[in-house]
Length: 244
Image 1 (cartoon, rainbow, N blue to C red):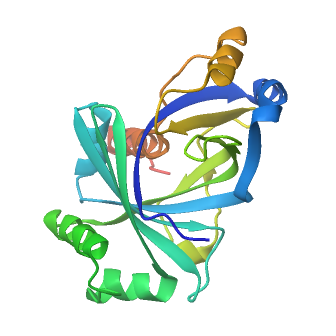
Image 2: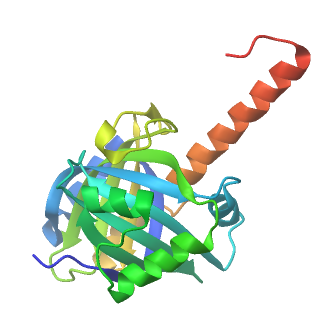
């Protein structure tokens, strides 16, 4: 299977209960099929500046924003495939550049600047990494994903993410997918990714179940928790209380 390296699409997010997920899947079952990954654990290292410039800007909901991350599907070994990604969003449309490489190659690039090749996509990624002077891995995020495609439109993809968790230590994809939960056990994040308008069978199912788009940024939620704890730590320090 050819690995996709360039994406352009719209993405909508929804917060569902697991019961809603089961009911929705039952209603649209005849129109979808599991994707090639089926059930997977998605692991991502998010890169940012020392003052979290990228995620702070993203949370301001500007017309244009971008994220840089290194992603794997399950915990990788040195010779496993990982994906270095630059994700841009402009006027609601997502554009993504992705470079596939071995984890060992990714580590050599991130630590020593050794590019795995001189392709156009790799040059774009390298330019973005160098543009942000203090960029480095800041947050690890993992979640358990179930993904589906439309049987008639391979560009229409529906994913459900559960057990969303994060950590700010051991920022290495090979260190495991553990982390602190940032989404309640009874909830999941559904994303609908499409190149064009959603089909009638899907919009009707969503309308009948009164499921409406929402907002949930995994990295943004983790960042808010990090900042909240920093403030609490500083407040306790000023009051002379012991800090946890």
